[in-house]
Image 1 (cartoon, rainbow, N blue to C red):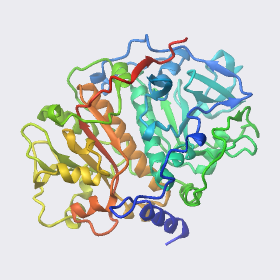
Image 2: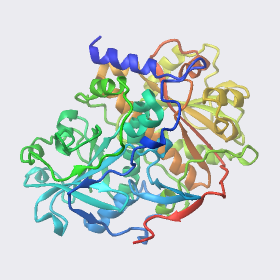
Image 3: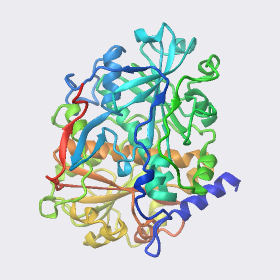
Length: 519
């Protein structure tokens, strides 16, 4: 086993929560060093984009149909960014206020940054291709670099790129050593948020999977000395286009003419940082060449009419309290939610399966279920879990009842004693094919597995919201206690993210303020 894999397996085991101990963190909120959730580049010219709140958007249930493509202009680019990476609302409690964004984030810490690489489209670009950084606080773009390139000749007209990066310190500040997991879950949330926002404009989104992190860091200017106080690392590069694009598209011609130094100095996010030795180690161990994954047809879901898509996005919320007495849902609602994440969300073969703790679903027995999202793993799942499991197929294809019993106490226990896991209609864990994937495809796959889980989480949020329910991502769970419930004895499969759905309690003491109300 190579050194990077050793580092990664050690990191994953060492950052598991258990009944004996939680993964290491400071253990309290050091408010004096809380990182700024908004990145800006001092000295770079900032373009303020027009707001898209008044734009008419397609009904949510039509997003998987063939919608007409919107031209790439200032207004359509603005809409894409606002309904994916922008601020949904501000929350106010007393003298405190905080922004909630359209892409869900663990603890609302927002480690993910977005960069846009555009062909000459905007008048401010001086007829050159441009690298921008998106500034959600004012819904604008920092101009970082302008250059000439022939790269766009390889793509359909109206294509452009979005790069996502992570500032892990924002998560580390609260969550310590486990933060790298949450940072990558958030990147997956952002990727799916962009996917949905692109669909609203009739656009398609493709993640390039033949790029090394070194090239992507170079493209986004993240390793230029003296421009950054805190580390920021590149995650993924996405093509937004009117047509499907090959995920193996080369960016060599794009890299050829980049300026050596970009404009702007990144703002300092906090006065000082905690030192966690394992975080840069695992970042370095996973910052390697990606291994292309098998492509499959992207998921298309037939839905019943609901609400306008922008309303679903703007009204998506995490809840802290589920109302057990009102969280009974119908079989139809249950199926609608699961169908929305059954197929591939990113056009790649699924690695995550959903282990469900069903509490309050009409016509469903209480118990432990599994939604197998890739049939190739079914026999291995049967082999590695308890032989006593029923594997009784339900009315929904590839949803199997494993064990019939009341799991409310168990789901709460494995979710760090959080009642939201037991008081909703159901909760779930995302069980991934793990060690085989890492051995076969390398350490970068660890990030990609978390991206897949984060994308599922974002879709679950939106689907629940669209039918009048609420959801909450759960990053605090007792890893091996979940595995023990399933009979898993090795790391062939590992749970990477949890989620709960039901009807949530709204705290009337916290007020809601419209985003960008001063513009």
